[in-house]
Image 1 (tube, rainbow, N blue to C red):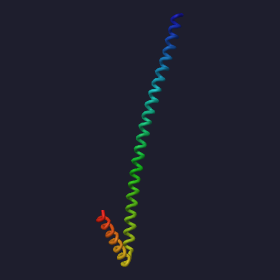
Image 2: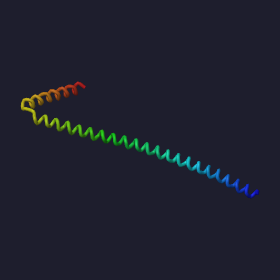
Image 3: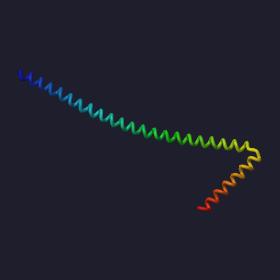
Image 4: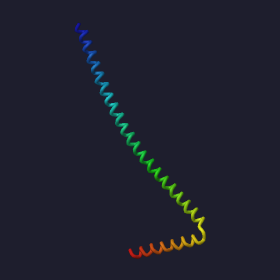
Length: 104
């Protein structure tokens, strides 16, 4: 009879031990998953920032190309009088810039 009680006691303690071990393993697994998830979130944020930066650069480059193409198109379509007026105004702006530089 005591053998059966001892056996049941050992089985019960083994079950409690297994449950405790399982709980510890599950807790560690959960912590590892959270840690990996945080790393993944951080990596995702970094990647997202890099993608935004690259997109901004490409949009800026495209806008500059478009602006250059627009200016080229406008200049090609200027009449001789408009071209002379543009050159005159550019010379005035250049003279103003030189004057401001001398005053500094």
